[in-house]
Length: 266
Image 1: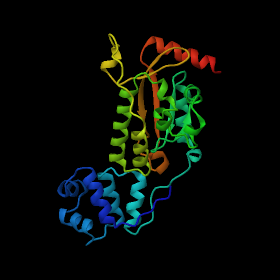
Image 2: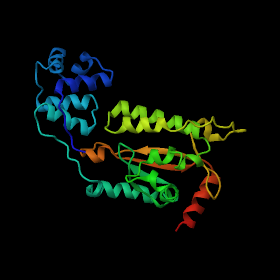
Image 3: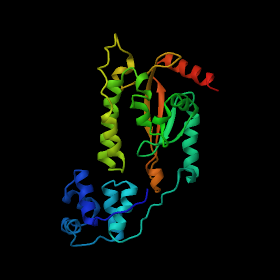
Image 4: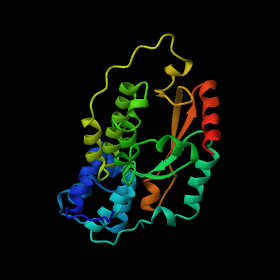
């Protein structure tokens, strides 16, 4: 996705400052410029230097793709390259090492729009049963999960999980303003609302810790927890937008079932 902009740099700076809910005084002090200078930048009466764009972007935690847009709007060349996933070298090797090392538990890597970049064998077994018209390409993991013809029919706590996913995408959209996320969110919200989840007798120890993904399988029900891993200090746009989602068994029965599923799918 090429970085382009037709808006003045001051408009972009102000938008990101307001998105972060920061005052001009707060940002100016942190970025080491006067509040008056920042006001002049935002209103178009002053154009920031290349270094000033860098400082403001760092202070406002602007994603690398959008930083390139600010550099362009200020009259400078973009700073951050955007390589294909296949060209990420050691970073790609690190992603695949995490995915492979996580087996027999499912794990996958996605970009900022939740399009699948890579998955381990355990995850591929779950995704392989989804209808072709849902899986793309590109395969969007959230569409494949919540679409009525996707995994939704196998999610035992669909109402709870759907609400969690929608909240997460809304927070992500607010933080990143990534292109395509608003459309994805609208699509996910348009899917039929599930019936409220049936109450569970007794519950499980992990229910008070996180929202689990409860998934039925041919081998029995699964209860999964997940973590998200991102790269620290990325300088490439693609790398900045990669997230690794790793699922863990929430109980001993799920752990045994995952081992059986992977062994059967070899």
